[in-house]
Every structure is written in structure tokens, then in C-alpha cells.
Length: 189
Ligand SMILES: [Zn+2]
Ligand SMILES: [Zn+2]
Image (cartoon, rainbow, N blue to C red; front, top):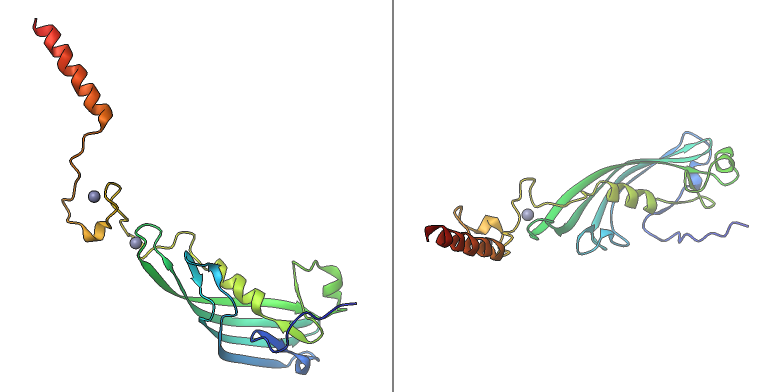
């Protein structure tokens, strides 16, 4: 019934046949190119092809395979305030249980609660992607106190002198000023 959709040659798909029988561990320490962009491309993402530095242990447990470890990758994007390019080194923890087909865990959980193995194939990509995306800032900034752009001229405050101001009179205040002058004229007569 279960049709294996996983590509055993994909860089984040692992054959865990040797982990059958609890207690055995496989160490995955390698750098692979990200199969797709994680995050919001052009806003803030680990770009497709960027290096994913994996340090993951796959351990056979009675119900399946436990994946634990760390992934490092560089996210790129632009500052939400000043639009300058931003680069962050992300380091995230991965901890995910993959249930064996036919295991009690598989039978008693929903597919979106606990990951499944397909035969002996384990797809680490969803866990890696979720961990990286969760670690991404809601508002990427070039630095925490980035002052952003001048609302009048759109130039980054970092490139403007401290005394930068725009001598513009709001048209609404200009109208009030006219009224005030007219009123004064009336009183003086
Ligand atoms: Zn900024
Ligand atoms: Zn300005």
C-alpha cells in the first residue's frame, strides 16, 4: 500500500537499514548543498545550494529512528529597516523521531505529529527545514539598533549627518498659520 516517494539518492535521505535492532547509531557529519531555499527568498532565506553543515546522529530505537544533532547554515536577506544586505550564521538543533511503518507509534499518532520512515528510508529534510525556518527572525535587522531610513528622503540614517532635518512645513499647519495671521489683523483694527 505505502508507495515510497523518497529518492534514496537525495542528499538528506538516509538508508537506516543498519539501525534496525535498537541501540545502533549512525553519525552523519557532512556538508551538503541546500536542495531548495528555506525561508522567504529575496527577503530572508538560506538560499538554494547554500551549504548545510550537518552533525546528526541517527539512532535506532524500538519504535523507529531518532535523529538528533545540529545543523549550521548561513541565511541571507535584507534589513527590514534600512534594506542593507544581512547575513546570519544559523545554528539549530534537530530532534525528531521517525516511526517505523507498522510500529505502535505509527498506529497511534497522526502523520503530522511524528515523522515516518518509508521502509528504511529517512527523510531528514523536513526536520532540517523546520528547524532553520523556526530560527529565522520575524524582522531581520542588519543590527539590533538599526535606525532605518529617513522617512522624508529615504536615505539610511547611518549615511546622514546627525543634524539631518527637512525644513518642510506641513500644508495643514501652513493653513492654520494663515488663519492666525488673519485673526490678529482683525483684532488690531
Ligand atoms: Zn538596517
Ligand atoms: Zn532625510
